[in-house]
Length: 407
Image (cartoon, rainbow, N blue to C red):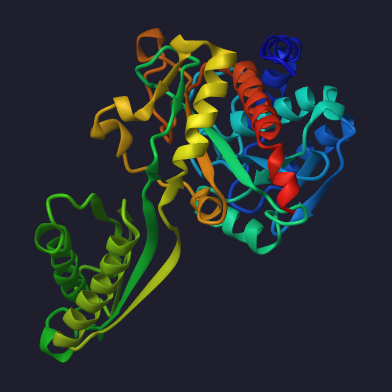
């Protein structure tokens, strides 16, 4: 399969890829609750005569070709619980929104599957398709791995791509990662403070949970200020703080929720340990009981340097030199933006690469970034993305058939 043929194939189905994306966009669902989305994906695969099966909670897996080596392509399917404000002709009206581009990812991977189905007999091994739920809460990849997505047949390496809205590069530019950490580890946490309620006129008879929580909030800031060095890329955010029901009552309970992110797994574990110690000990000093719960999270995403070099070569073959850049040429403010990605779980199991695709230049009206209720994406990149995924997978298989002899 040469690059020209793959590009022609992608152009032939370009309108259908966009149509698929728009249906997914207007039927946005969140987390693992993807009944309509999963049904739609399975129907599309069935139309292509590609066998698929369920994997874990709302995951879908399919494959083309046979034997080793095995190259996995992944797309996430979930949206965000955001009320859409984007100016599009196909809005979602159920209170959810594909504000991170996962509708595009799913449509792109279905497009790649359609291209590869035309050339199934020429695939030198197996291309595996991973349609994943619950990326936004960093739970879906782990669940699919636990349910065998990387097995039967065993995956040798994996790739995903992420569209980038409002990114200052020409639309369609492929951003190939440098070797090493490409996305930080993340953890969501909840801190519950149990005090003792009483009347506001007799504070000495109670334990003010709000006061305790406020001291915890300030204490946690010292992790960044005094326990991390200048070279440690990490942060801690408290995004929810709630306590009390009336102005003249000492609140017996308070709750805080937040996130932590770190570009190093050891730093991540240190921060989690110190968060628990600080919260619990401050609580004890004020006679309150504090419970810290880590709700979900993921490790750092590790891009494999050798695989990235191969993918960069293939991307240039199909997109041209001018539309492929290496992330190592960017400054730290671009490569360490802070968004986490639960494809990290896959990257800890097999050599993996996360590509970025510029999908909307600010000067052309795409001025909002991911997760904004007004974000829009340039759909013209989608057919090219399908071509990149299909071409990179098949070229890697062609050039790594020696792996067959090792099984």
